[in-house]
Length: 443
Image (cartoon, rainbow, N blue to C red):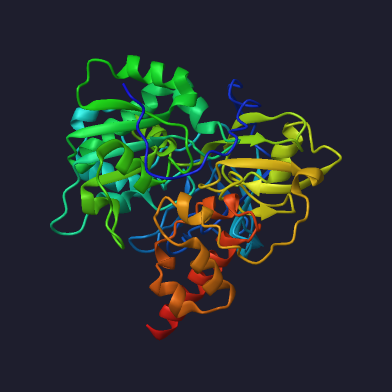
């Protein structure tokens, strides 16, 4: 089959060779976890436990608040020692539940799951409620509560479920290893999602640099005409949901619209595997697979870690930092935020820890736009990043809004190709934040 793709985009070095062949290792439960009440898009969860209370792994410790929110579960067994503000991967100080490990093993199944039932016996409505009860969110980084996608607006019908196995961000290999080592779970989760949505077809998009995954998934899915494994060209941002939808179905999500407007729901392969865990074993979302990599870490690995594990514990398990380590990026280098501290917890949307050296970071001042048009040529959303950057830089928010700044998905491609090293993505993010804050203020 000819590999599919989208228009425009860029080709940054993959830098995946450090960890692509390293199997997933399970990190032993740490002495302490820090579980922020907000690990998702939407309202923070409300604590159900008090300081001094004993909890078991899998126990619900915070309740979702409203439709767009996610339930939180203890990732280890232990004692709640604090409910306090803690440094968060977003850069803020946010409330979190701190649990000290007391050595308990196993986990408590999410209520109502009755694990092990055949999928044929579970209704789509049940699966939606179990997604909510299990605290599932998008694990590719966006962290939208998963159940929200399966309540389409009136008049909208979901025809296709697409799993994102592209993993187009440089350095990251956690999805690669997950698909290679747990293909049955990924496919089971996809079938459950299709049943939930009443979708007639399921696709898994995988880039060609994961030929071993394509082969395994095609073998496991052979004989099921409702599932198709789609090879994709290696290009960034191939895994962005609009790019994925266009590459696989040819459908274009309208400006200001959502994937459901063209009959599609997109989920990450990690979310599908987490759903399989939930339905088959009762395990809520209390751990996830991440990639720990980069020139600044001694032993790069793919790890399954309990949520709330602090970076300092993960780094120690990976042989520690090299002497010239200079910056931590949570996620991939194109979209992940930079940090300079190790007391941050892994949350549901954390897919990687990239440690860069001081030599890699460098310092380069940006210059004025030279009107070269490179950012326009490669923008996958067909925007004008040059003008968006100029208006955002000058705080001319109304002009930025008219030029479609809210349609930008912050993939970072424009900043990557800019010869003037202009921080276009940073400016655009800031403009979007200001516009959103103003809209909230005016109601």
